[in-house]
Length: 333
Ligand code: AMP
Ligand code: TRP
Image (cartoon, rainbow, N blue to C red):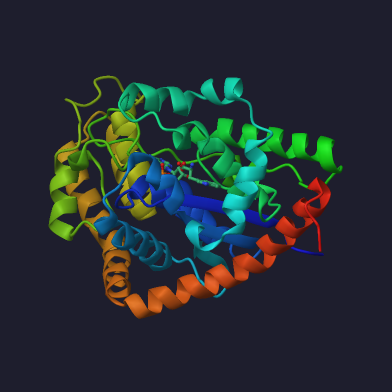
């Protein structure tokens, strides 16, 4: 039986953090043996915010290095830069003819951007979901491991696929769906208790894969807590729940048990809990950071990885574009 096709991308807009690791990369690593995986750095998508050309290459290399240091094996998956596949912008152009202004203007992520950057409401922001659909459909993928925030974009990708099929030939594009491990996604909150951990929010409440041990300790010791529960077995406030979630992801079972019992018995000392969590988190991140730092210095190896990834991805993308051109009627020779 042929393996299921999986596509996912991470924008090269900053340092990767625990949310990216536990929400996305860890799932990529779990899928790399069983599926036919295409993972890429969404460098074209990052252009909507006009990044400084000086930073772009380092940002792309860092995302690649941090993915590999987190366990992604470029021999098992195609790991590439979006801009290395010319078939993606070609399919994007084709799909743009099937995407309507009205539906694009209604997308919540577009409306958010209009609010956040009113001076730069460019057409790339409007057609962001069309480019994302092209990223996925170019490999005719069926599974897309992403967070909840991307569900609407996936729905649009399904709509564009259906519209193309209805107009030009049934079943050319399969419908892609969000994929979740064990049916749920881990959502890591910011350490200040305000919303989810993200690349652009409070840097002091975000733990990056590039943070050194002391930075991790400082950030965790400052995480929001309170005076502790006063009733046995109380429901946890979400910022305390987040600390337990992080502990669950990085500490041993007996450590977790100790603090869970202390919480339930109302004698938990958050200072001690955070000290323990900080040490376990530092131990967890250290090898990833050290490996990523080493890789990031080695531009030749990273270039080679990207080049080989692009070759693998090109083989599948070229087939799709050839088929799409034929169906549309662009086959003159
Ligand atoms: P982004 O950093 O927005 O480009 O997201 C890259 C991937 O990481 C997406 O699949 C997101 O859903 C996932 N992700 C980002 N932040 C978090 C978070 N705080 N918790 C869980 N997953 C996240
Ligand atoms: N929009 C996604 C995000 O912000 C990144 C992305 C771009 C992506 N193209 C994709 C994710 C294709 C999955 C598949 O996280």
